Length: 433
Image (tube, rainbow, N blue to C red):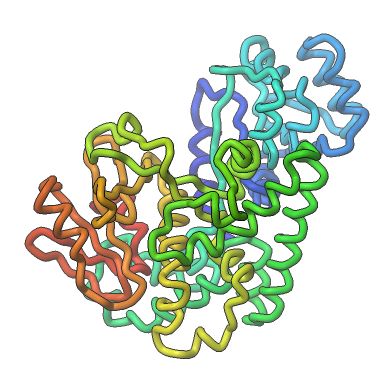
């Protein structure tokens, strides 16, 4: 399975002054597979160590931070010689041994020749428990579920990805139905690697659902196992409310939909826990579309999206028969799946900060504002082929952006003030706009 993140790992390997690298991401997005594949492909040998329920590693890192002593212990534990110049050290679930995180500082300062890559599913949660963290001594790489382009590659459609990458929309449009069929599959299957791998081999929708249900169950178990007892019920209630929040016409998150009388203060810790685990994405409203958007955040208004569109479609019990009925899929749930899909693609693109905007009266809304660092791109998401873009036109008339984008199930077209980008090509925002 091809992952774009492999290119980032290769760049990291080839850098002279690299630091230990930590891959962040929710459980089951493919961190362990990626690290092992990287080690197998690009190193003479790799030493993989999981810190989950590993008492020996806890004891090893509990002593002094002598790099030589730690390396000796790792060699004894793994039964392998660790040559810093041809061996990749892989630390999995590193948050389970907080002092191993601290040790990364000493590797960076005292023995930078060692090549270390780490992953932690609940890393954000661990940090909020007061874990000492080697600020400035490590690098980060965020990993998400497969993007739509990665999904197409997994389905054996590399040439379709290349057409979009090349900006060859004339040819791509000729095969629009292929792209539409693939995006329908993606709405149902999503980007969780195990689900995609199984579906690409068997094309079995029922098996895809069974795996998704297992993943959702594992997340629920994580709530019970790792979250503070007093917060667990609120995490569950907030988590289970997200599908209904996304199906509202106005997708601004409303605490009262969790339960009557619910207030922000009661659910702050629950939301922080879900965000830190990578299970939800929080998209803030901005008061004004000015650079940098972060300076204009409205901290009281936000939308919550899930990690993966396939998991969302599983939670709302989307029936596979909907896939066959024309564009009905894109009308389901008032566009909830479509906005989830678009946000999910944006998260996989580098150097993009994503927000949304409404006017003070709430009568006009731009689904997403993307801050590239150089410009702000307003993006209106349409679930169907409806070409009306009243809010976007209103925004354009008021703020006169250099580029405005509408994405829907329509063909690519560049107009006087507007670019129409097909939903299946929305990733071009990252490099072609």
